[in-house]
Image (cartoon, rainbow, N blue to C red; front, side, top):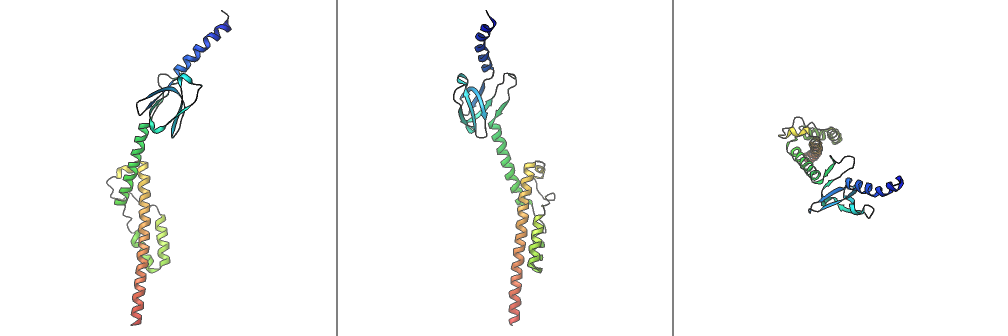
Length: 200
């Protein structure tokens, strides 16, 4: 048999074996298993073609319907990379819970000692000085190392630490604003008293 004819006859078998080795498996949350070729894994969807029609139309599944994707490569059949969307969802949920815990802890345990009284006393001496003091104090990042936070060990986690410091900073700004407001109120009261005393 001529070599060219033999190559032509064996080509379909070679292509078929390559396609079988390169098959991907998509497992949906409803329990369906799709055997095909994954074309793209996006943030919101998975695009694939059926193995029986790899040259046919591409189909799309919403990511929230996909439980698991196992991609098979002809060069690495023994250790195919796997993507578990359930694991990603669990990690996202844990991250959100950690951020929430950090915010609650900062509201409960960050005291911002001296911020209120420093701003208020400066405002009583001069509203402009109080405003400047409050602005400067608010700009300085809060010191959270001295907080009586029972979850202080979570500061080692960068997600918790970032959320805690951001919430503590907002709380510090709020205390400076409250100090300025109290100082202005005190100045107004003293001005009214002084005016009344002068009219006697």
